[in-house]
Length: 304
Image (cartoon, rainbow, N blue to C red; front, side, top):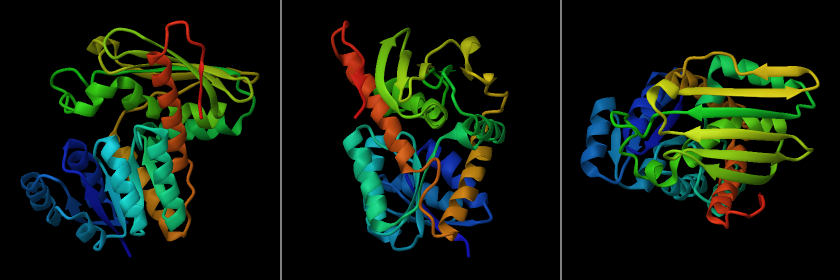
């Protein structure tokens, strides 16, 4: 039986990513959408031939799972409510804008025994997923350096009008993507230092448990010729770099949805990209934000 999904949110990403992928996947049935704006909710529902709701409880009564595509501070509230209703959670990144809120989502999911998955595009692209299998099987990596330099806040981008992205910048928008690669390979982060650059550019220095260190550069405001995504690791086995890939969110979502439906069918709740990874990423981002707000001579801020 197909997993019945509701989408929470009516914006660009909810329509063109989550709803489009769920509508096309053979293992899911898109049945409803929830939104705060009745006109947008109605238009969304009409496009996909589904029920539109402004009452969250009514949507939750019709579905097995929800895909949440709203600003991260709103997502945390909705995720807790959906988990309390026993609905499985396909979450967006970041899962929240504070560790406390992320902890509430994780606690609600654990209490009610629901499956969770945080959709981070890179982890579900076939080339990157295969590379991650190889590098996580190796041990003893000493460090890494990577960057996601993008243009999502430039005029003409579908994300250019995103208020939370302008407010929180590349740190919170792109940080979860890169951390989803770095944390499983180099281990949990114990301390963070950070600095800023042009536009919303942020540079992170991460100190991992066990002695490894990594650096990440994040920006959504680089000139288009400077766009690019890369990550390199080094250690006793030599060097390893993320292979070339096409940044195709629908391909990645199709893979994520497939893994999610298998997780639910097996009655399992743990996945490499579940809410725990989302929570640990938020902890790093919150620490970096505290560092940037501190005195210029502040030492690395501990991750709690």
